[in-house]
Amino acid sequence: MKFSYMIPRLDFTAAGKASTDTKRRLTQIGLPIAFIKRVTIAMYEAEMNVAIHGGGGEASVEVGTDRITAIFSDQGPGIPDIDLAMQEGYSTASEEIRNMGFGAGMGLPNMKRNADELRIDTEVGKGTVVTMVFHIEKGAS
Ligand SMILES: Nc1ncnc2c1ncn2[C@@H]1O[C@H](COP(=O)(O)OP(=O)(O)O)[C@@H](O)[C@H]1O
Ligand SMILES: [Mg+2]
Image (cartoon, rainbow, N blue to C red; front, side, top):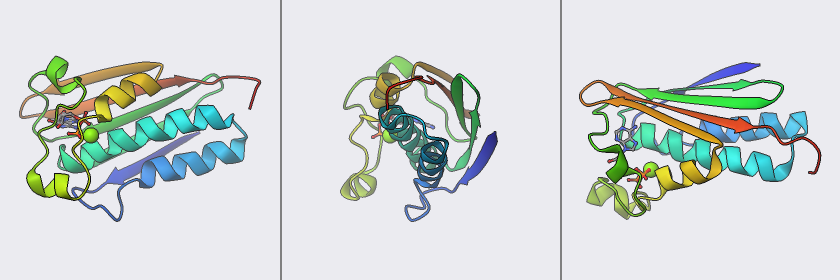
């Protein structure tokens, strides 16, 4: 199964659609709640980054037998220093965005924590592709 979503720029009413829809689908499939939670949290952070920092873009989610692969891509400004961006509390979000409750600088650290694999391909001036893989936990729910 494969799904894709458009992620509009700075549209906070549409934001969260990819993670919310994926959560619903994974719940229908009957995957463990704790696993779904990890996927949902990481996906939400990734799609907000596309909406806030990446100028909008898209997400694709592939559900395999043993893994879920979620890819987020945008053609925004790119990330000049990934090590810096990965640090807890680091954010380039504007004052306006912070006043809306975003820009705590915890998104990338949360993605790292919740995904089994995180890969960031980025080029300044070209855009960013974030790939996350989640290994499906069989058994306990
Ligand atoms: N898709 C992206 N395009 C450009 N910059 C990004 C992207 N995702 C993350 N960043 C950069 O990494 C920083 C840290 O991201 P994150 O940990 O999610 O914190 P926050 O979103 O709260 O700023 C962002 O402030 C931004 O500078
Ligand atoms: Mg973020």
